Amino acid sequence: MSDAIKHECGIALIRLLKPLEYYKEKYGSAFYGVNKMYLMMEKQHNRGQDGAGFASIKLDTKPGERYISRVRSIAQQPIQDIFSQINERVNKEFSLHPEYQNNVALQKKHIPYIGELLLGHVRYGTFGKNSVESVHPFLRQNNWMHRNLIVAGNFNMTNVTELFNNLVEIGQHPKEKADTITVMEKIGHFLDDAVSKIYKDLKKEGYSKIECSPLIAERLKISKILKRAAKNWDGGYAMAGLLGHGDSFVLRDPAGIRPAYYYKDDEVVVVASERPVIQTVFNVPFEEVVELAPGNAIIIKKSGFTEIKQILEPLERKACSFERIYFSRGSDAEIYQERKELGRLLMPKVLEAIDNDTKNTVFSYIPNTAETSFFGMIDTVEEHLNHKKTEVILRGKRSLSAEKVEEILSERPRIEKIAIKDVKLRTFITEDSSRDDLVAHVYDITYGVIKPSDNLVIIDDSIVRGTTLKKSIIKMMDRLNPKKIIVVSSAPQIRYPDCYGIDMANLESLIAFRAALELLRDSGKYNLVDEVYQKCITQVGMKDKNVQNYVKEIYDSFSDDEISDKISELLSDEDVKAEVKIIFQPVKNLHKACPNNLGDWYFTGDYPTPGGNRVVNKAFINFYEGNKERAY
Ligand SMILES: NC(=O)CC[C@H](N)C(=O)O
Image 1 (spheres, rainbow, N blue to C red):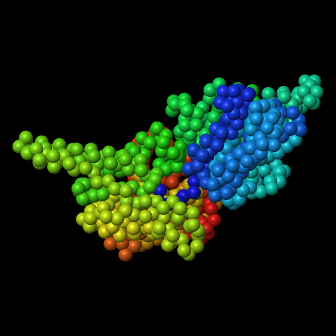
Image 2: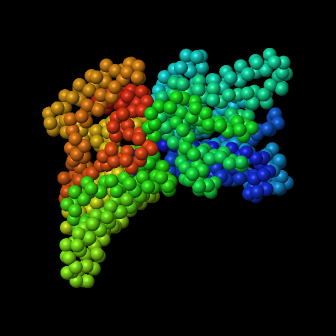
Image 3: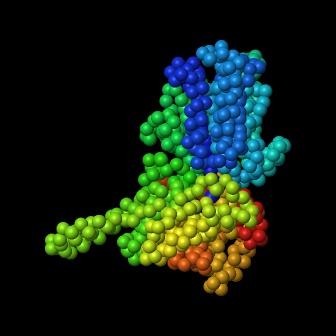
């Protein structure tokens, strides 16, 4: 990926179903859960590097004993940082109290972080600041065990403001306008409500106050709380929560926008944002890790009883296709094949762009995420060559000499590693005037493998703003003096903002949008921009379900190729000597390659929730009025 887009978050939940002694006995440590959590978070570091957080709960502690621990960090290496804090603390306890070493009961009683229920989170912020207060898990404390709530999520709601106002209307006074707090308070409100109702019932049934507590834990219906809390959520989410006494849950949005997978055996229940994470950390095969169905929650009671419950009526399934193209780890068995297929499907257009001249074409990719689709692309080049070779040989009707046949067979796709990522440079990049110069050096280039008669084909997984391509990659590639530079994007053109967890909230930074504006200008139709703005303005304040996406009209009169050609023009400066061509994946091929992830709103403008149309409407108004703020 050449453009750095902020995106996603990762969640990990572990519930140990046996007493801690069991893990000490079987795996040598009562910190089994903590160690597994470290691995689960590390294996999801691709999903968020702004911050990381960890929380754990000890079951069945005595009053007065601490049972909730939490640590959060926004250090440079936040996962490392939280686990070195945990390690330091644990080691300190062990050296001060050697008697804890082989006594799990003492460990549980005195050492923090150890516990049967653990929640981890890696964050890329899409809302609010990048301070440690915004790092998940969030904690809502109370003296009643059941009312303690810990929440972490991979989510973005399009209607946080409305949800926030709802809370104020019911008399609450949230201390911050953070989306995670808003969501947590919503759950907390109905949790409080449920706890007091059960308490009243129990009192009526004749139980004493102290007898009530364990019975409340038993009777709490998490599904009911979630149903009431999530009723008005409009967004993409995988929300995880722990309750002080030991119940836990993960709820996935009704369109299945954000991902969630789970695994259960008689020792653990595990939930994570990505499947291979669970496979690797718990050493289980693909088939045993199950995707959580949209609108469903996995609910793990304190007793260990686990069930999958439908919480919200599922919408049409629109799982985010960007997860497959770029965000999730390519080590997932399905994602790997899908990425290869994306590369394969692009090939006919590439062959056309190079006039089938594979002999004078070098194929390469932008590291690291485009590597898999590159393999797919090369598969197809090989097929194409085999076809060509067979034809020539057959045409020779057995009259060809052995040397000639060998020469024909020797043609191979020319593959080179052209762009090299200098990872360290990225950390210096800031939003100031020296940025452009630094951006230009994030990648380095391999010299000496391109001839002036060569085409250079380079595949990237997507092109969002095009900044790095324009300022760095294309210029560097041009220094190698190729005849033609062809940049291939395994994702279609990104035309609309995201509002479900990827940080692409404004329109004017999208290169496809800028290309469409240029085309309108060129064809003397720029007044359409004013017309669309007027239409957007009339929709302000309308009910979400009645709002339409008028921004589509900006693209309507142009073909995909016209927009691609304009993008090529915009990305190539006058000092670039080679001809530059950009090829994008058609949306229908994306669906063919990733048939389970049909969520494509950033490419098509078809938002899966009503709030999406409100966001794109607002994004257009912001663009028109020169307002830099986010549209949600
Ligand atoms: N990428 C995400 O899932 C972000 C979660 C949440 N909206 C936050 O900003 O903290």
